[in-house]
Structures are given as structure tokens and as C-alpha cells.
Length: 219
Image 1 (cartoon, rainbow, N blue to C red):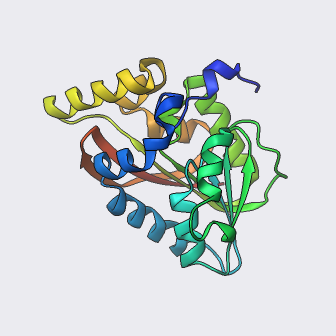
Image 2: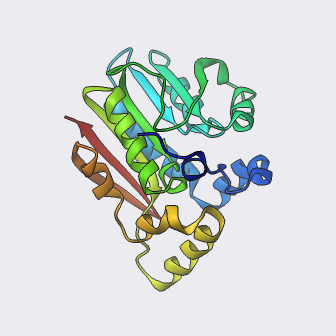
């Protein structure tokens, strides 16, 4: 499925001019250390020796670099559609351990069944529904049977304060692409893409709402 460019790509901070402040904003608003630690533990626990991990929409590379350092036996591939943000990633300490590639979720130039794990960290809320489906289909295509999908992204706010906070994020990142997250539909998107055992294993209260961590298996 090919999705029009304007429907499938949003800059990491919502606006191109905010790219340079993406890292400090995420650190201040998303409980980054906590959610990335939980995500890393989950990915590493299910990754075979010498396995391959694809970080789809890797952004500034924080997670990919940390995972590559924690699992030097693994091949970590970081893919993003924004060349500027990939430049930031490549300049970071430890970036040489990661294979950086430019590409869009939904149009990955990778062979079928080439990864043991796919990570989508703060990616899907940038994509409109058709692009979410395309990205998840691509993840399933490149995963080996039994491979794992790992997602960290926004879920349904659970009280008035969180709904207000998430409303601010929606103004930044766009309402059409965040509407399904506000309604709690992310697990359904994953299941509809053909994944099994869709599990939400953590929910973190953050400045911008409820950040959920999910895992699912490629059947």
C-alpha cells in the first residue's frame, strides 16, 4: 500500500523547526528513562543471540544506540524518513554500532523475514490511519515467524487532566493521526495487522498523557 507523503510523514517534534529540540522535549515530558528502560528490557529478553532488531522511525537514535550497547551481539538497524534527524543520530556517541538507513514506515526496502524484533517508539501517533496500517503490515512482513513487535506510544487518557494534556499534544502532532490513540484503538490496529498475543504491559502517566508499552508476536 502506497500512502501519499503528506499522510505518512510528520517531523519527530511535529514541526521541522523543532527537530533540534526533540531530545530535551522527550526527556522532559515522556518519562523517557523509564519507558526506554522498560522497552529495552522487553526487547532484549525476547531477542535471540546474534538477533536482528529494526527500530522503525528511530528518530534521533537514542533507543537504537542504547540497545546496541546493551546487546553487542545483535544487529541493530535504525530507519527514519527524515535525513536531518538521522544526521543527529549518526553524530551521537555509540552511533557506529547501529546500521542507519533512510526509509519510510510502510515502504521499507528490506527482505521478508529478516528481523527478530521490530520496535516502533513514538512513531505510530505521527501517522494517519492508512499509514499506521501500512507500517504495521511492513513490520509483519520483515519479521521472522515468532518475531516480536514492540511499541511505545500514546494510549487513551484515563482522566480529565490527562485528556487536556493529550489535547495539547494533538495540536502539535495533528488530530487525524492521534484520534485513534485518544480512543484507545492502538491494540486493535496491531491485532488487525495479523499479530497475535497483543499485550499492553505498562502504562506510564506523563506530561502529555498515558504512554503505553505493547508487545505482539508475528504468527
